Image (cartoon, rainbow, N blue to C red; front, side, top):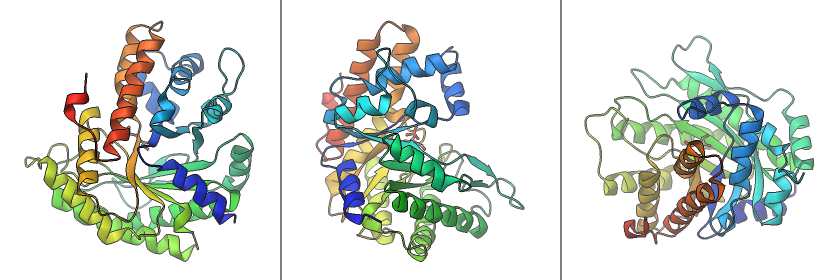
Length: 337
Ligand code: 13P
């Protein structure tokens, strides 16, 4: 394992004022997002849309890396330049989603385990050749009556740790993502407890597999009340509870912590990240790895008019810049246009 190279990549991913853009939706998820706006989700439409994201001028000021899907890593622009090459040329690190999706966990109704370990060593070697320098694996955890089970937390943590070890062996920084789903009526306290337990089990498994935390990025959900919880917490409570939970459960050696947006509005994702960085005092950089939180406004522009590429790119870069400021605690709502 080349730990120095992994550390350098991981640190660049969370450089001051920078974060990650996730554009790695599976075909199923992309179909849902496109269909909601009346768009066909075929390979050419995906190439056209993701091509504008990859090429957005100025995105590199706030975007350190982009997470691509297998298909996207192999696609090129109209001039035949591959998407990973376009990113590299602007100093944006190409990443790749490598899990093959969350499947029903046997004997545990309502819970999922993420698959994709079979053949992963060979896939990672190919992804490295294609230019990827970090990878993502997403596990999903549901809060409910008696949920999550220990079985779910342990199965997902074990898979994440084995994936992370394979990534480091192959020279890719693992972005380990246990997402606690926002949907449901659970309280913010329940989310705090589940987040703490999830991270505790995850870091035990990572240690057991010998994963070097200095060459790893944690991607996580914020500590939030469920989307249908009657008691929606205020901004400061969310920021303090998330920061406290992370500090208590995430080892200081981790290279960086980044959030997913997970169904929050684009502005909420920015404001909450900013509030946490205003609190400060954390041993790792705290930044973003948003999908919808950065893409959603740009997708709306492009859905309305496929010719409005410049406008869609401007909207994307604006959100990226707002989040870059939030990663430094320097965002202000007055900066929104
Ligand atoms: P969202 O920010 O849209 O939740 O997506 C981030 C991501 O990569 C989830 O795996």
